[in-house]
Structure formats: structure tokens, C-alpha cells
Image 1 (cartoon, helix red, strand yellow):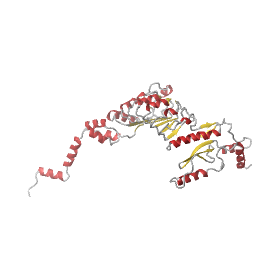
Image 2: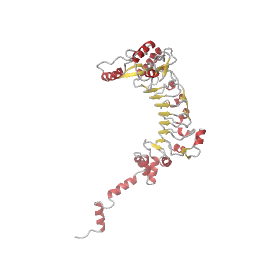
Image 3: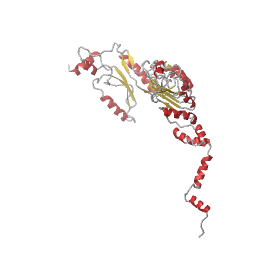
Image 4: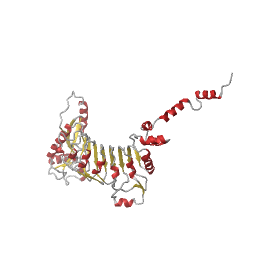
Length: 415
């Protein structure tokens, strides 16, 4: 039998899997024929770190620059991560989500305008990194600053035309004003917590009237204004203004105000807001009925953290007699001077209770659902839990008189 020629041996070897196959050549040439736009679309399914590793040649590097990086949190919490961010600022300028946290010890970001002097002095010998590098990411959609070592004003952080979500928490020396938000024209969600250097009037949010959906200012003591300034925001779903100095009157909320609101948390400085102090026990039902009316017009609305209480300056206020009861007993038994909303199924009511959750009977504002109702079983189940907690103030729908309270106290004390 004649021996195969060398060319024939090579062809047979390729057919049997030895060396590079024709399919491999086809795949390689097919990949080589992909343009940068097609490669950019493929990179769009990868994480930022994987895209950086995939930039093997000039075409891939150009494709990476075009890639709209998917929404995935890139957290800058060390010098190594900061250096990676610097590299990405030119290699992946379309990064859409960045979180800036604390850095390694002895490092900080460069001071901004008007820094706090004491903080600047404490960190004078720290190694400084340039926060302005973040301005290169013009397609940023989400920016979080969490305990970031920033000191002063940084206008560059409020100049992102496509930003949808801004979160600033525990960044105490970052100086900014609500008016700076005009540089974020598409902002949908704003979350601020423990920002001692934040100032402004919530009226400044009106530049974002048509985009804002969620607003939270928590422990931001220099925020002021009237919460009703946001009443006509058509997309606003959540408004949390706890621990601010925002004012207003819950009774001003009309049927057409806050049309899409699902969560409302107001400060005690708003009349009828959480922690509101009533001057008379008889004042409480009026506020409760206002809250009830607002909720009935907006079935999905949650009054988060709401409660009221009787002022110690009220002529209705009393306590246990110091001469008749010792301090330990007085701490155990207190008058039910706090008022809370109650729900069983879809039925809404309110009740007075002590600060330690010792309740009176519920004053229901809705009728009991019919037995044929689909939610009747849920209502009965939750009602039982509510009623099981009523024992000391059983039969009382509002705080007892001082005489009645002292009688109850004497019975409990065994007098």
C-alpha cells in the first residue's frame, strides 16, 4: 500500500483533532471580523473587572471604551480600588454605578472648597487622592458616598446629567446645598442620612419636580421648608423627612396632593407629624381622622413611624403620686398618653397606649369587613392578636381620668 504524502497526513491530522482545526480557524476569523460596536455589546454582559481583563488588543480596548457597563456596584474602599477606578476612567468611561466609601488608614481625598479647618488639620499629613477623577464618568446612573473621607464643597459630585440615584450617608464634612441638585436633572431617588453639613430648603427640589420618586432626609438637621412644597410632585412615591426642621400642617393635605405617595414620614416639627404633642386628649381624634382621610384617598400609603403623645404641659396630663407609690412602681405603670394607628386587615383604627406598649381598646374608624369578604379570616386573625394585648386598660377607649388611673394603680399595688 502506498504511503500517504505529508500533505495528506496533515489533512488527516486536522480531521482527527490534532493541531488547530478548520473550525478553530473559522471561529477565530469570525471573532476577528467583529467590529468594535459588536464587541462593545458583548462586553455589556460582563462585570467591569472582567471587561478590563478582556482588553487583549487595540480593537478590544476601543470596544471597552464604547461599552455601556451594566449596573453593578463598583465599590471604592481602598487605594487599590481607587487605582482601578483611575484606570477605568479612560478604559471604561461608561461605568454606570460607583460607590465611594472609606479608604485605607492615612489616606483621604483632596480637600474641597471651604473645608472644615479642624478636620483639615487632623488629616494634613494624609496621602491625598484626587476625587475629581469621578467626573470622567459622564454616563453615571448611581452614585453612593458612604463615610467617604471628603472635606469641603465638591461641585464635581453634582454634575452628572444622567444620574438617577444619589445616596450620601455618614459623610459628615461634605458641604453641599440642595440647590446643587440642579446639576442632576434626571434624578429619581435621593437618600441622605447623617449629613451634618447639608443645608437648604426643600423648595429647591422643585427643579426635579417631574423626575423625583423617592426622597429621604434622615438626621439632616439643617434641612428646612414646608413639606407641602412637594405636594404637586407627580411621581413622588416616598417622602421621609424625619429628624429635619421641615414644618407644615398635615391638615393642609388635600385630595389632589401627593397623588402617587406610598410612604410618608414627617418630623415632629410638622403639626400632626410623628411625635406630635397634643395639648388636650380631645385634640387627638381630629388629627387621627385627618390621617385616616389621607390614607383612604391613597390606599397604598404607609404612615411610617407615626405616633402622637400628650404634652406634659397639658392640663390633662398626670402621673402617679410620688408619696403613694415608689419609683420602681411608677416606672412600671404609666398613664396611656401615647397614641398609635392600628390595622387589622384593611380595617384602620387608633388606640392610646403607654410608652411601653400597654394599650387601651381600639377606636375603629372602618366598619368590620363582612364574613363573605376574602380578607375576613386575615382580619379576625390580626384582631385577636390586637385584643390579646389589652388587659390593664380593658374597657377604656381613651386615657382614664386621674381618679380612675389611681384606682387601677392601687388595685395592682395591692392597696
